[in-house]
Image 1 (spheres, rainbow, N blue to C red):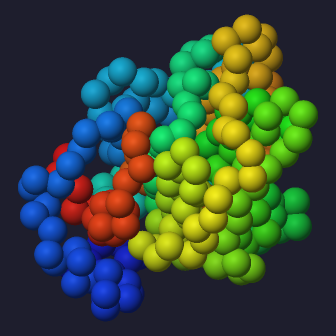
Image 2 (tube, rainbow, N blue to C red):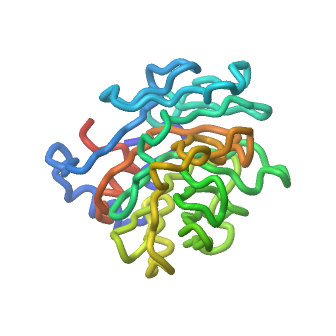
Length: 255
């Protein structure tokens, strides 16, 4: 099995053995909140496979789609956010901003620029300030990080230094079981430790920081953009097992 830009042979042997032992058609999909393939989307709408969730440009923001495209990805099409993109994709106010543990966030990412101003790039999140309520899942100085706030302080769990590389597909996943945060890169659990503090979702009455955003910091302006490709974004309301993360990385989850 080989997909564009990635081969199962690059996974450690122990993960391949686990993968082969799975009954893929019976893989447990319970708890699936949303899955975005980007296969049949347009720049104006990014829809989940069941159609329940739709990312659209923020109202009043840029409608210049010249820096948004779709190219061959790991599985089917991938969303391509190019340098200079100012389109700010988000869900409607309050939708999925109540995400809290247990949960799993997983997607394929590929950065295509290595500029100083792009060392911090947000994949998705609901936190518009490091100390605010909500979270961000991001690339941070070549590390994968899950950061959240409790309204007064900021907390983060991060992989070891330089675990992500530009111009290379990586499968990134964050699993929070309510106590332990585990970060996976390319099917390997690189960080697993107890969360520093309670994970507090965005209160319903928040007027400005109440959006679940994609490829940008959750603000009304362009900040910390992801410049590159995204594919197969999954959101689960439960902590996936190591075997399931490997199956997601391989694209063998029955869809």
